[in-house]
Image 1: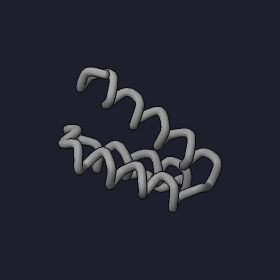
Image 2 (image 1 turned 90 degrees about the vertical axis):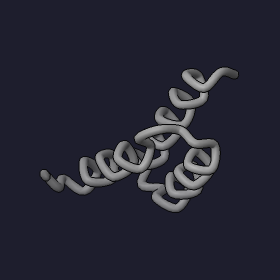
Image 3 (image 1 turned 90 degrees about the horizontal axis):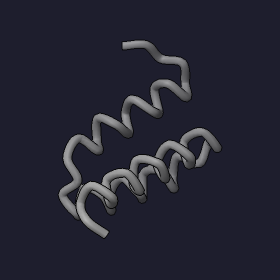
Image 4 (image 1 turned 180 degrees about the horizontal axis):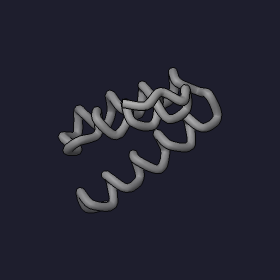
Length: 57
C-alpha cells in the first residue's frame, strides 16, 4: 500500500467510525495514521467529528 492509498484507507475508516458514533475507534485510527505520518489527518478527523455533532466552524 502506498502513502496515497494509506491516507485514503484511514480517511475512509475514520469517516465510517465517526458516522457510526464510534469515536474511540476513530481516535485509535487517527493515532495510527499520525504515527505513519499521514498529512492533514488530524484536521480531517476534527472535521468529521464536528460534522457528526453538527458543529460549524
